[in-house]
Amino acid sequence: MVTQYGIKYAVNLITAHFGDLVAKVCECLLRRGPLTLQAIVRSTELTSSQVKNSLLVLIQHNCVQAFILDQTGEHGDGAKQSTQYIALFDNIIQRWRFPKFLTMVSKKLDKQCVELLEGLLQHGRLTLKQMFDRAKSGDDVVQEAFVKLLNAHFIERCPASEPVLTNPTKEEEAARKRAAKSGKILEVQETLEQRVVEAAMPTEALRFLFATETEPTADGGKDKSNSSSVTLGEKRKHDALESEAESGATDEQVVLWRANFDEFIRHLRHK
Image (cartoon, rainbow, N blue to C red; front, side, top):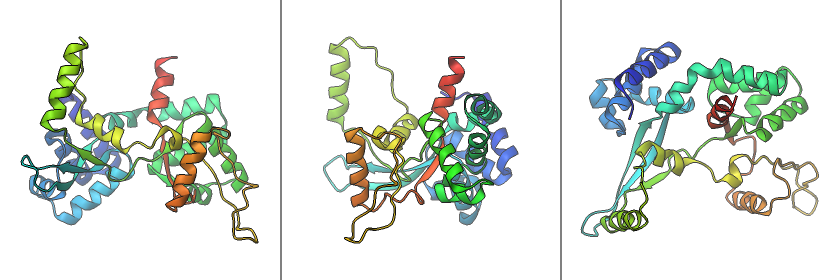
């Protein structure tokens, strides 16, 4: 559970980085938990436009996650869905460690990797094209640095924009408690924030997958001579990529990437 001091510190970080309006929305979510857009507007007394813009900033910088709460009626009536927003306290707190993250990459990798990571930390999320556009070096150099960061798991694909979260039914909740009791397992209650983060996270097959497609060939297929993947040779990851291809989501120019805070914290703990 987040303490009052933790909330104050998180709000101070957001205020310093994004200003008072964004911090007001963030504080509302930290103190009240997940809320709909309308509920945030009522609670903060800001305009709908101000709240929307603040949420966009917070989501862009991985401080808030949107999700759809799917609530099934008690008597089997139709499910009720609502889009809600939850503050990601752990991600907010990591912002003060950004200089440490950059220092770590400078020691383990190279200067180009540091520049690429710095851009992601400054902007929250970027496509590969945006990384190319803002880089001082050529595309080949940028892509090489990108692959190095990805191989080290210092960057990852961004989570789903609005994962669907369902509340467990009474029967499922009772079965879970019986299983825990019979197995004599000390069960730790999973927080809603953890459930949302888990639901939004890409599968392991896709989280660190990078592949490029080249120009179409004469027979209408794809020339994969320049295709690259940091996980080449693992069939399940190729299957996942093919699944994405069917849905038209393989263009690496539109996939959003971000820093992987979990990996940085893991390294800091094992120093």
